[in-house]
Length: 619
Ligand code: ADP
Ligand code: MG
Image (cartoon, rainbow, N blue to C red):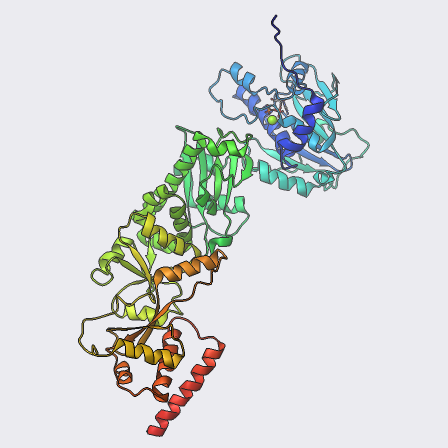
């Protein structure tokens, strides 16, 4: 025995799911009503290509009646169509319409899941459809339902083609009877839809008619406000060669409600192998980008869908601002699906490539201009390199390093300029002011020092050293070692390292101190305090991640045997004077890379006074 049939769904069971779970944001019911109106008009236009009628959607806020009304002069619906597309949940007319449509302008219809209409019940306790189809001889229909489950349907009185959806707003959702609130939602979701949308706020209307007069008439719905709230031809859908710089900036200001100007932008305009339109703007990203949030608005056929969908846009691009309009994205499906979708991956790879192309293009053809952007964009670019090695491979030739002198060099340029002086090392400073003395030791020798002072730099340097395919590259902070500062000389070679170490250990009362003797080419510099690069980085990293393992600081005190002071110290009898000098030298070494703490500073000043007094006595 065989039994065949169709699974049936009970509206009583499915409606609560739609109301509660399908849409996370309540206000999207407005988007759904408006987009249905737009669809109805788009269809009408597809069937009447040469029409010059004023086709529009009007949203009317009527607080007195407790209603929000959506009126369009699109194709309308016959009774059969209401039966089919409204009375059956999850049944969209889009597919059938397109199947029967023979023209070649198939792109503009928004709907296709057949669920949008029921979002009306998220905010309404009564929904009325008042409609008249464009078809010859069609009768007007009036449909009403209080819960989206039971409905009544009868002949309507409408005489003008089109549809009005009347939402009687529930007590809980009264906010949607405020014109400003509705305007805000319209701006957000409908600001770029393809059909002119007008907002009519009857609360604001001085010439308001008698509230007892029947509402919803075509006459009344005709908006008085003569400017549509939307821009029906968004810039990102245009051909890049038809867009002016001012237009790009204007779109930026409008989209992000800012007076700020973007640095530059990338216009995405692909039809094949996928349909992707959009504009990505590079905002001014200031030094500490930790708190910086980009904003990428996702549109689907000119309808705003969501902000910052991480699954579609490569994570590091989230620091940018912009819009992406992609009609083929399955945005109503779950996020985890998007993550694993091959199509989405391709999109995301394409976007990455376009951004890399833009950077390389600027680097190659407008180097000077590009350098002026670098301070703003470098955290973003570096972050991108660390997050996505493919991106790094694409842009590695265009990465710049800013020197303490304000020049911008690529890695290759740094290397060739410092050949023979810096080996495979790149010297850097994390705080050009505090480390000025140590920086000067290098720059005086003609070695470039680059500035690495943002949060991302530490990760970026490690990445360049270990993952960037830069054989042997080492970033060395100016106070990490002295290998770049030495010279060949026999002078002072007889100074005993052990003896000096003992002297300093006694003077400073620190038996752990490491002392080294070197020949530094700055003969006026007696001592330097260095801290091994990897040890310091490790400490800093664990501090950033809040896991300070109490790793001890491991400094080395470097004595310059070419400096007369050190040679004099070496031949001195150990005693009060030599101890005083040791302490003073040690503090001076510390001072050249970090300020002294309270007690140490007091001691330093007292000791300095003592030394001055000694000098004065001698003179
Ligand atoms: P979708 O828009 O995904 O098709 P909806 O639930 O939003 O699904 O709408 C279901 C159907 O109801 C639409 O496909 C359309 O046929 C019809 N419809 C809804 N609103 C209107 C309207 N304003 N004018 C004409 N038809 C409409
Ligand atoms: Mg719809």
